[in-house]
Length: 288
Image (tube, rainbow, N blue to C red; front, side):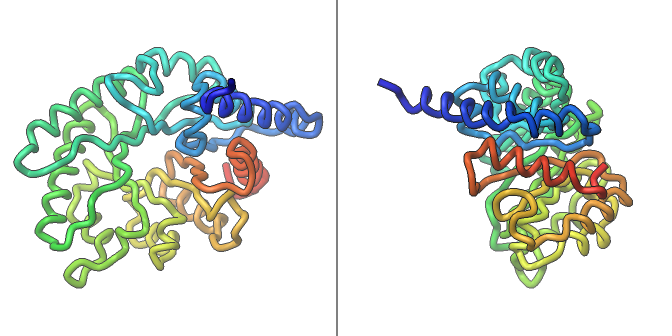
């Protein structure tokens, strides 16, 4: 009997195999110039669980050049030692430049314990060759004093990682654009973290869902967003709600270092949606 793991592995590889083996797509991949288009591997979370090596090969064949991971535990990345993961990714013509790390449940009383966790995570991810370590979410406080505690925590993590020439950042969702005691949470965090220690990985879709425009924030804080999450309602470009041209042009002007496609919901099989998202950006003249 086929179990869920085998089904996910088989269905993902069959769909992707048929997609990538089409003559039209092969010609397109062979003839196009490599652009710096990254992928957050959460986009293919089920496929990565079922067959990490096979899925990584698919991602490389699609044309992605950089990766951001979303799976770290017991010193391993998708079940591999960090150095091994780096070697595998490099062998497929890509680089792992960033990672999402939730970290331990944090309280001010457990600050030392939390910092020990980040020290170990930093050591492991130095072996993997990352440039960025990103916290993907946090609880939403009700008081600015409590939010300030989190900002101080992020400054401490950033001080730790920056000493090893790795940048620490925070990734937003929509709720960070809610107001706490009359202040937008996201703006408070930007103003209360040290730009030399903490950056912000702007998720452009969640900014829009929070009621604001990514370009406005890129212009307001031009030195705080070296990394972007490029996201849409489903596949990149499918909703028509985001002006990716302006987003990229403004980000490049401000010194964009990396950007990662993230697809969380799909009109197609995930591997197809991820390929379509790459193709959309690869065909865009404004993407370098």
